Length: 413
Ligand SMILES: [Zn+2]
Image (cartoon, rainbow, N blue to C red):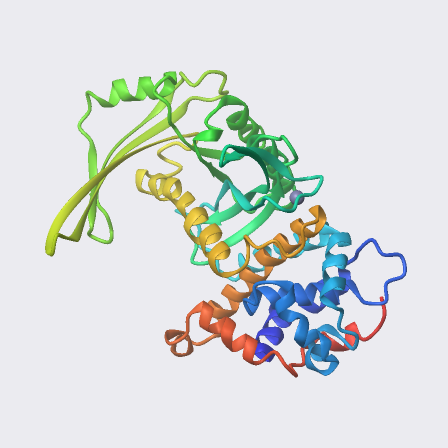
């Protein structure tokens, strides 16, 4: 399976060419940068968890030679090379995946529009290790102040797709707020993906004029969660909707109903260059729960509000609702799945550049793995195999596997 995965990644995404373009800061490298990157890729797709889990296989030179070249690096070297690796080529590879998938109709969008979400995430925290780029906070434990260091970042991620596809990631600088990081991230994403998507979805933290105008100025639409009773726009919408009967649809899965109010032309969001549309929903979900030994039907209602620059003609209420909730993809799919099963929240090496490069490697590896799973494996093969099962199969095929790029790694860069 590993040989097939490598052959697929090389044929469809030209992985061999990517590998040749990777660089790092060493002046006279003995081991190609790509050898270290392939080790990172292997770590993620086989779910080895940490660098040390690869140590045994790297020590026996014959084992991974077909994947990483004739001189397998030690795990220490992998960490060191990652700390000096240039991130732009890795970001280009991530963009390359997305750009190759789009014309292949692997991406469908929402009502013909491609929608990207941004969201903050804490990747890991530690009370033992830190680096000059850590965010720090002081906790009180047993009456004593304890300093905790962490690395947080913002991820830009495509939503509404079968694939959980991240477009880029940016880490918060020490003392920096998430919004500042997000703007830096978006500037880079807009440049790398100029016409790839035209809607940005963000949570209530981004419900302000500077952010909405930033997107308007770059010809992107915005959907933000509209929260805060003190906000004029929220008050205005509430006032108007109080006198209107809601529209309603039944959730596709038949488990609940959505009542919605959706109006355009609100000008009360201070400083925003354009009138906004506001949609409010009251969503009721029925659940069968076992309470004190008996099955009982319970109901839970949640309310949501979004503000957007998209008109009703540009996106239906249903589409806006899907996009607004699509942000859950980033919470559920991307972060939770990647964190829980694919090592996103694991610190492979606590060094600022290595952290970014390992994150980018995880996003690349996870994208390749999903594409291989969904588009190369036949439905029959998939039916009995989860993505985690696939990782196990890949691990089994690791030793002695020969990848198409093995020959090119034999030459010193
Ligand atoms: Zn740190």
